[in-house]
Image (cartoon, rainbow, N blue to C red):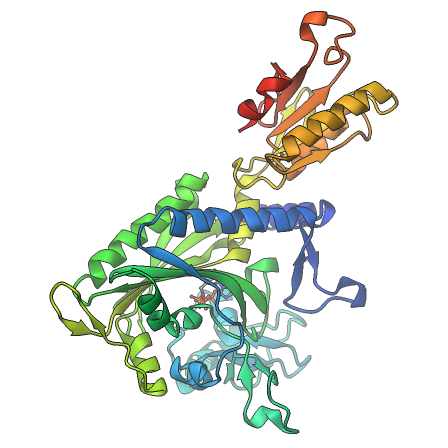
Length: 467
Ligand code: ATP
């Protein structure tokens, strides 16, 4: 167990170091000493993040006949968050160390000593549990065991956008705590403006904000993060069968992306919120253990009913075949982009030996790789090689994200591309110019990331071979 933990810590350090070294992820506001819970995606990170979003959109929107997309506003009418229950009840249990004033999540401290506090516990219940374990609970900052009492802390972040009064915090607007509320409030708009019929889904990718008490584990828990959510509006009768369909589809999605099945598992929520019918998490085996990657939930008619009550606008749906009237129920799939990013980096990070040298290699599936192909002139100081390589680069970069590299020996250039997961490197050499063997004129070598194998192809076949 301890060995597994150390291995995990080591793996995490390697992933974090690679992310920084190669410009995938930077600490937010680094030149100002950092800003807790915020991270920036660098040049390769933004490519990977965009590819993850594209893969999700392809699976959830392009590949589904009855799911449509949406991009709703981040800041909405404040009533949205009253209706959703976030203003009243979107909180985590906060406890402060009396020695160093560090704030921690009480449930996370308990989890460290294998005591599980349910997120639905009242503040009294969690205090009782916390008191019963005080002798074991240590402050992660100073190591002391002197905590105050646990209180509930609301995670919704406020903003004065559109409010010009002096004490705007009396009537704040909110940065959305989840993207799905934007979907619920547009249910009627989508229904009335498109040809969808229940069951149908609305998918959205976008930023969400939570005042996380103790953001930790790198990009796993951020204060500003991105979600990819799909809400499927279904009849009450179909809710549970479609829930099972989506549970299975979402698990298969990760397998299809190339994740090992043993690194994924379902975790059932034991104590559901009162309106929910069922809730499963898909957990991934992060370097720090199995943790929630995605939630799949059967939410009943709660969400639309709440917005109907608070807005006064009917959310009723009339079935065009049976004329039955009802408020649709919701099956939700909700995953964080940042958690997927970390899962992808962990899953495909590898070290091996190739040609007698050890190397770091990101075995990313082609569709996720930030750079699909790197183009190298064999030598930097031969204008005719450079000119030909530039010609090849112009050709491939029209079709896919490519990189031109003429720096250092070719072996070093391969290692650099292996580290960022580039599936192919194309080298332009003297044979390409036809100088040595005329029959090889206008051919290049393609080197494969995973095996190091090299093949020679005609430039005219290059795009087809790389695709
Ligand atoms: P957790 O229990 O880990 O706080 P949650 O159950 O509150 O997560 P949901 O509200 O179900 O999470 O959000 C759906 C998804 O959004 C999560 O499965 C996760 O991938 C992502 N997510 C939630 N909070 C964060 C965060 N602070 N940083 C990054 N991703 C997050």
